[in-house]
Length: 476
Image (cartoon, rainbow, N blue to C red; front, side, top):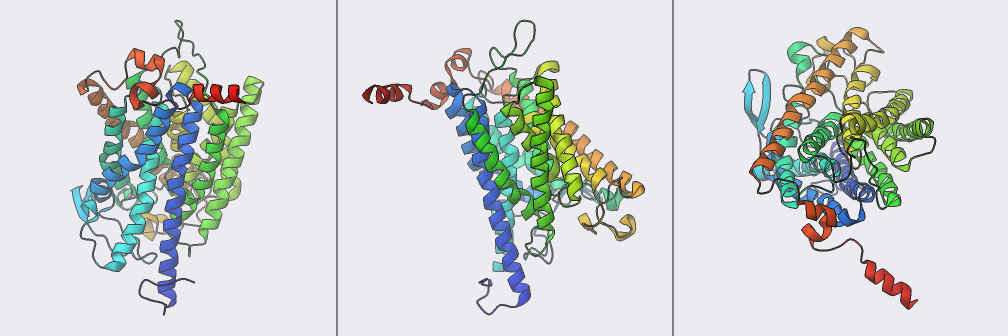
């Protein structure tokens, strides 16, 4: 039985509000559980001598990012946000902090969640904050894979705080927070403005370009490339762990995407859930087929990345496309991610131990563009508060269904993607560059520490006690 915020005698609108609040909190819990999946995937794909260091970065990014988002990130990102009629967040609690006319670049909201108003408003913002802080942690954790095995712990800690407090909220304010990209439709007629249902761009591509920036500053791991620049395989120590972690991510992704309706009363969540599963399935199968064709044997790491690529690519368009399109997007992503992994490693000579740049960066951008291609116009009327006169009263529409409206929507998506690749990447690259310059010894551990393993050097404890295993074997 649903109990209202004001007592057991509940009318229908209050019951719906309570149900929607519960939906958001459950979705937040699922997304937070994804952190376990990321930890297992990244740790499994890395070598045993760095396992504690890698899993610790995935563990602590939750707390570090959370703290930064609590104090400033949420206020910057959502000071002008409201979602009337669904879960009690009916009016914004902040105002523009940096704006030029109708173009808002940063918000002035409730720093440290202070001064939220009455109990109903507080409850709605509490649920919304919890959901959104989980998304932020996904962005923050992506570079821990791309920069794994050669990232100094103290520098990682600074990144976690910076990502939650400033880096992630910037692009978030421009998009989900109602800023200038969000309003490209109303301001310059580009469809519905930038549309990203659950974060292919806002979450994944933003994290992917940060991972790219960090990997460029750090350089490759010791021994990754031979004297001729040919990449060597530095095999992960526990592939079953990585594959099991991927299944955890698949499970959590239903909270990531389906709960982004912000309402259990919005039955579109069922379509979103199906599209999410379809893209994951077709992405893994396409990757299996492609890697078998190109390499003659199935590669478990590419199966994993194929599934994740499908999930990342469908995250932006999942509410706006038909199931057949979700399957096609999964297939495209499953192939693109393999080619992107090889291109990044073999041509660009960038070392990414887990393929995070390809999965989240490249396929995140793919998902952003798919909104402007495959969206069928049946859902999302008035999205981003776009005037119906601009969109002919239709839902979010891609070029396959209405070329005129679709090309304008694809234009808005392209502006968002270009912003990620230039401005957001530039901010991440500047951050890591300054860190590297002004941190004693830079942001990379010493040669000796990398050779012996970061577990003992930086964490003071090994992942596996081999001597204990040997003693147990002898005793038996």
